[in-house]
Amino acid sequence: MTTTSGGADRPEHTGRPVSTSLRVLLVLGSSAGGVARHVAQIAAALGAPAPDGLGAMVRVAGPAELAGDLAPAGGSVAFDAVPITDRPRAGDAGVVRRLRTLAAGADVVHAHGLRAGTLAVFAARTLPRAARPRMVVTLHNLPVGGRRIRAVSAVLERVVARGCDVVLGVSGDLVARARALGAAATERALVPAPSRPRPVLDRAAVRRALGLADDVALVVTVGRLAPQKGLDTLIDAAVELSSSNLPVLWVVAGDGPLEAHLTERIALLRAPVRLLGRRSDVPDLFAAAEVVASTAIWEGQPISVQEALQLGAPIVATDAGGTREVTGDRGAVLVPVGDAAAVAGAIAALLADPAARTELAARARERAGELPDVSAVVGQLHRVYLA
Image 1 (cartoon, rainbow, N blue to C red):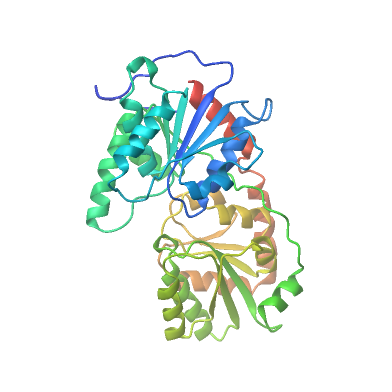
Image 2 (tube, rainbow, N blue to C red):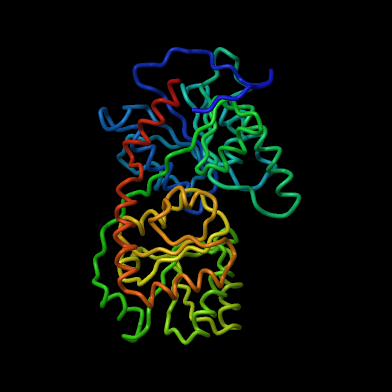
């Protein structure tokens, strides 16, 4: 853990005794899936009995629509519906009051995301000093958007950095930002991919379902249809592959706000790209792909890349954010962010060289075996919560 010098406004951990069963409040806001999946993963792990878990009493506070995913019926995780949105709104004062009540009964408050973290910090700091829980925030995304959004985000980042006992970041650049803003302690969060079922269909069945001719190569991308994923670069790279007379179909599994824009651009450029929408058969798609690709502008610890590594898929990815921290230097072919020609060239080289794909697939499996698992996450959080 990294410690930095700090100012007088930084919270002091009171050293309140930890109960026999640690009381943990997890807080998150609106989520497209990745953050919610991670919180569900750690909620279940923290509540599991030792030695696999901490045997903690876990509550989750977040939007009502996430209740089924975060606290399945019959499980040990409690859920409180708290409407934390991704933009400021008039009801935020009520959210802070609700979080304050929940925080008063916790030993640790662990918020996920910048908005949820800011509201949780405000809530915890209004409690009497002797009753304040240990405050931990995990930052999952680099603030992006226009000048106004970035300016507001910079203020929130400072509030989180100076209002927490520990700031975790899902990539090294987020950790460095929090440290520069005066965080008392920073550390890279461990975010392993939640377990998925193994592939069910064989490669030929997947290709038939997609209507692929035998000579057409399959490139697969999984991700939200959002600006962070660099999908305009993906379309441009697909056009480059097509102009090189390579018979390719590039499928994108996921949904999101850019669907209409991407559909229009694919049609305009006649790009060999098909948007599949949200899919439950991602392992089958990965196992059938000649290449799995990520064209993201920024990533933390991309879950889809981890899943592709586990399945031994040849991967081409942009060297964005924490992607290299996941793939290492050998688990994937990494290319510059936003460089459609480099993406297309790397894919074309792999399509032309089956031996290179086989070797890259083996390196992917090897790298997957080096990545942290859920037990490593439990160990990290146990140390962070009780430090």
